[in-house]
Length: 105
Image 1: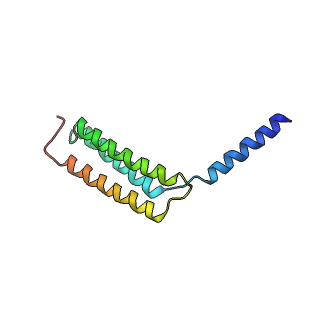
Image 2: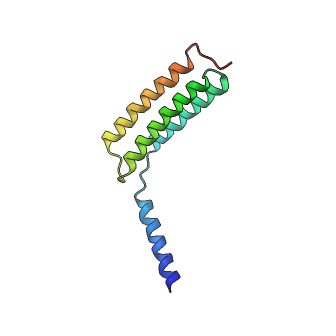
């Protein structure tokens, strides 16, 4: 009897937790594309390890912003706008660092 009640409770809690999961596919897709651009820059030698570390820190900042926005179960339009702005900032940093004079060759 205890196992059955415990099992039902666990399933109910898992379902409740999943119903609060907030999807942010546009943010996630852009994040993945920016990560790919950073990886490509490392492979091609356009980014130095120091530049990679700075860009990774910027990507982590975007990730923290997204997690904070999702914490209450809703990502508001204002939060999406702030995340999109930070992604724009990171996008420019990726471009600038890939096209500067520093190379890891």
